[in-house]
Structure formats: structure tokens, C-alpha cells
Amino acid sequence: MSNSVHHAPSPSPTEPHILDNAAWAALTGPHAHLAERVGRAARYPTDVSPFTALDDPADPRAWDDLAALVGPGTVTPVTAVQTVPGGWEIEHSGEGVQMVDTALYAEPAPETVRLGPADVPEILGLIALTQPGPFLPRTVELGTYLGIRDRGRLIALAGERLRPPGWTEVSAVCTHPDHRGRGLATRLVRAVAAGIRERGDTPFLHAAASNTHAIRLYESIGFTLRRRTRFALVRTPDGQQETQDGEQQEAGQREERA
Image (cartoon, rainbow, N blue to C red; front, side):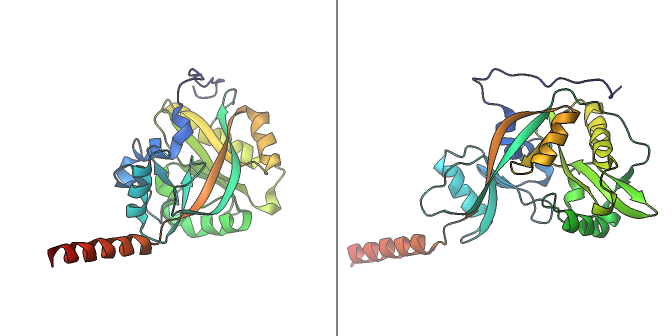
């Protein structure tokens, strides 16, 4: 059963870990059917998730592919990056934490309901009120989303987002302010984790480094800090310099032919 304590695998600390670039691993793995991809860059459809990812953030060719994928002068979020190449700009960046299940007690919650496309307007309303992170009209396609209703009204939810091979991210954990303090978020996280465990994956999650309340909650129920993360909103080169360079090269070729 899924309610036993589960210990995440511990790879060698000298080897790259699949969760170091979780979005890329998901977009080229279990979520490949959703991926929009150009070479070494990939993203989700813009109404599914804002995530874009690079095969290797240290490879300039991956950044060129990302620029081709999203277009010139476009602001896009990128994960697992520390710096950007020349011509790119960091519009905003933030610090976060990545936590993995090492001792979580997971169990189904009979009071939860499976949420689907028909529930999206209500989900978006709760997300707007509680701000757990981005949620878009087709985010429910990423995995299982569970909710708790009170007299028909959606008051809490949690679900699955990134799916690197062998792992599934718990995401969008939120509770209506009028119903906090009842343990609804914990029950939902345990229930979502139970479903993740049933298919053999290990739960993990992300939280803003400043959200100390959430981090303490996750630690108290069996998640362990794996690493600190950084996310960035970056602006792609506007293409003007490339156009100028191309025009100059063309003009030089015309002069040579003259």
C-alpha cells in the first residue's frame, strides 16, 4: 500500500541528479507529448505551464534554440540557470527550495474529489485568491488534481506538475483563507502523494525560500530539503543586432560582387 514510509533514492553526490534540471527531464520524458521543442530547448504550451527548459544551461547553442522557440524580445521563465548569455536580460529572479519525500506518510483522503477541465474556472478563482504559484487553463492536463469541497464550494486543492522520470512534483497546494487551520493542505498532499507512490514515483516539491511557513509544514510531514533553487524571468535578444549584422554581411557581399 502507498501509506508506508518511503525513502528517496540517494545518488552519488558527485553525479548530476535528474532533479537538478527537472523541467527538462519532464519535457523530454513523461511530458514529451506536451512539449514544444527546438533542439536543445523545450517548453510547455503557454496555456499549460510557463516552464521553459534547456538541455544544458551552460551551452550557448541551447540558448540560441530557446530564442528560436519563444521568439525575439520575449520574456520567459527559465529554470536551473545562474547566468544568461550576452544579449539576454534577466528581468526578475527569485530563490526557492526543492524538497523530496524521505519520510512522508501518504494515504488516500476519501473526502477529496478529482478535478478536471470543468473545474478550471473555480480552480483559477482559488489560485488567484491564495497565490500558490502559476496555474493556467490547461494545467490540469499535467497530472492528477484533487480538491476538497465545502457545501459544493472548492476550498482546497493540490495536484501534480513536473514529472521527471521516477519523480512527480506536488504543486498548487492551497486552502481558502476561511478554511485554514483544519489540516486540509496536509490531507491533500498525503492523498496526491499516495497516487504518485502507486505508480512507483517519488514525490518532490518546490517552494519559495521566503515561504518559511510552508517549508516548516512540509518538513513536519516528511519532506527534506534537497537543494536551493533559482528561477529567472529572462528576455530573449530582440533580434535587431542580428538583423544589422545580417544586413552588413549582405552589403559586404554585394560590394565584393560589384
